[in-house]
Length: 411
Image (cartoon, rainbow, N blue to C red; front, side, top):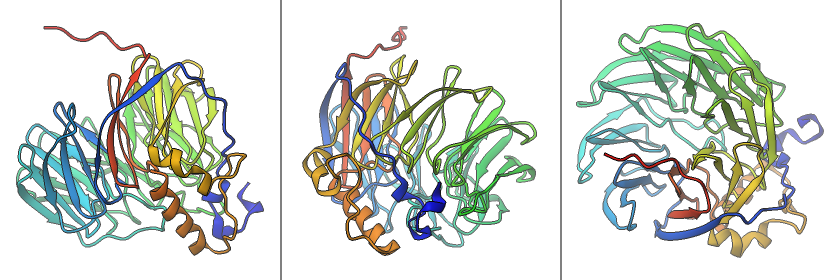
């Protein structure tokens, strides 16, 4: 498919963006928003009280989930390009200067920082750094210095590090005694979380443009299987115990977002192809597929009992039926509504008029993402509320009316 295009425009120009007829079953009410003044790429993270998000100006914000009040901020001194991870006491995140920070969760006081050997971006579309993963003892993350790290979560002291073949920017998954993560060398690594011993590796297929089969995103581990996706357009399911391939499926383009397991289904989003796929999680059989309005770099999130939400770089959040992929509703950022005509043609395709070089294309993406309130990072969902952050510098909460909710637990 890519062979028909100029290799300089290898991925993003392939966005399949025909606009699908939209249902209006759901109602969306934004009940607070915070303007940061700087792009947010890493996404948002929830705990029971707050929303956390860091921006390209290096400011981390802790925001009350109900009111939108900013409770505290922390200036990291460098752009924050990972999502946030939290435990009962601390907040953890990764900055573009190669430093991982731990803060006190209640007041945002710096507790420790750990410096890697430095960061590196693969290319313009390598938006994210590795979001740390945490267990009861340690913090795990990858780095642009080609290593996977484990540090003591209380002190920040190094426990072990593993050398890989290239950049590691996905979030690791902790599964039993293993830490599992993929990297830009096209390998998935399973590492003993206590010792740092590599237990197994899996190598992706690769393709003509991405021979390494680079793995830029997070892995998901569920019911004995490891799910991830690559720039070689493939979705992979591996056996957790051995790393043996269980199944894979080739999609139209990159798979960057974290795969979502929802019941017996695996929901995977496709970046430039703008596709959403529902697979049978065990067999890989396709249940349904949906073409979204534009590129997606973040994974799907479960919404209520019967829906999933996906966010696009055009500032739209689309809610789909988990059963059949039909559209239940569409939310647009204000910026997307106001500025869509500046960047898209009447038929819904991006207006690439005048773009001649890769630099032209990157400039287009910079302008479009910011002007349209594009959502590059992970959204978060709790019951009927979606929380998101944009490249235009907005963090917001939207309540979705009309979805079925799981029973509320009672004492």
